[in-house]
Length: 198
Image 1 (cartoon, rainbow, N blue to C red):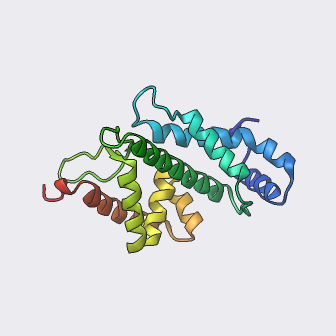
Image 2 (tube, rainbow, N blue to C red; image 1 turned 180 degrees about the vertical axis):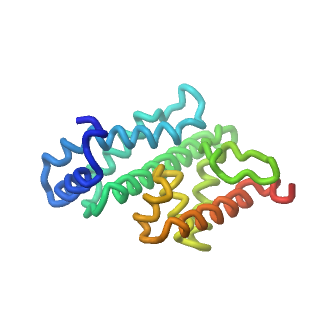
């Protein structure tokens, strides 16, 4: 079944049936889930070199295995499901970057996240950031403002738009826009401090 053949309502209904233990629901969800996970994975792997050990398909497979084999989750919506999936991918990418760094101390290539959507300040374009630096920055942002961190995770890692984030978090679209703008400015200053005074 192609992903566009399932409406948001139908997808939510099937997710709930999967949560309730209906095994057939997982079979119906598999193509939809794979397509969405692959779209998110391809976006995150864009900053990596060709021939990188962790390709989008491998990332999708690992995320899918963790979804299926992990603790049962009571799914309330497709947005919750894909946000959860995006968080899993973030964890997998960070775990992979850490393992590679540990294996090749000193000369390891740092794994980059394409963060070109972050606010540009003073004409300096932010292109990519090390996954581990981004993970640390997001952990710091959680301490400062947990909702802003959620907005970043849902927008960047989950690929949700402003309206979808607003629905997931139960806030207005204006609040999401404000949080997104503030969080991007903070992340820009935290990740690229050399550009702060330009």
